[in-house]
Length: 210
Image 1 (tube, rainbow, N blue to C red):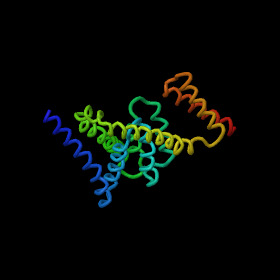
Image 2 (cartoon, rainbow, N blue to C red):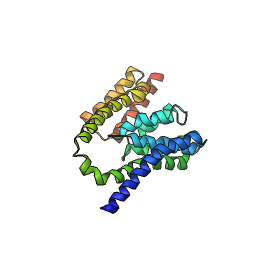
Image 3 (spheres, rainbow, N blue to C red):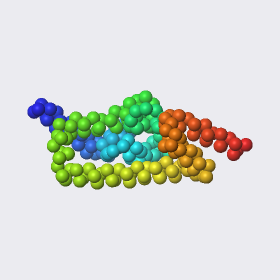
Image 4 (cartoon, rainbow, N blue to C red):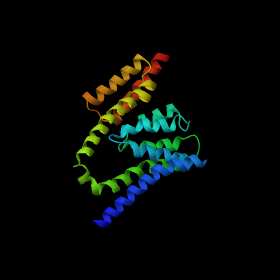
C-alpha cells in the first residue's frame, strides 16, 4: 500500500509539474514543439466528462494562432466521429496537419502523447485515493458543479465552432436534422451517418450549382 501511494504521489507531482512548468518553458523558449506539447497537455488536463468537452479547448489552442485552419479543424472533427475510440485521438490528426513543424507523423505522435499523458498521470495518481475522496461531501458537491459546467461546455462547443461554421443555410440545417434523425431515431452507427450525410451534402451542393 505504501509503494502504491508513493507511485500515486509521484504521478500527481509530475502532473502538476508539467501543468505549471510547460507554460513557463513555452513562454521563455521559442520552440514550436514545446508550445504544441504545452497546448495539448493543458487541453487534456482540463477536460472533465465526455470527450467532446475537449473540442472548444483544442479549437482555442490551434485555430487562433494559425496552426490549423478552421476548415481543417472541423473536417477532422467530423471524420473523428466516424471512427471508434476516444475523441482524444483527434489530437493525432491536428498534429499531422499543422502548418509549421512538428507536423506529419512526428506532430501526430507529440500531440497524441501530450494529450493522453495528463489523463494517465491523473488515473495513476488519484485511483488509490478515489474510494476515500468520493465519500467526502465537499468533493461530491464539487463534482456536481463540474458536471453542470460540462453541460454548458458541450452546448458551447455545439454552437461555436460547429453550428456557426457548418449551419449556414436552410439546406445545412436540413442535413443536420437528417443526421439527428438517423442517429437518435433510427439508431444508425455514427460512421454510416457521417458517410450518408457527406454523400447527401455533395448531392445538394452539386444539384444547387448545376
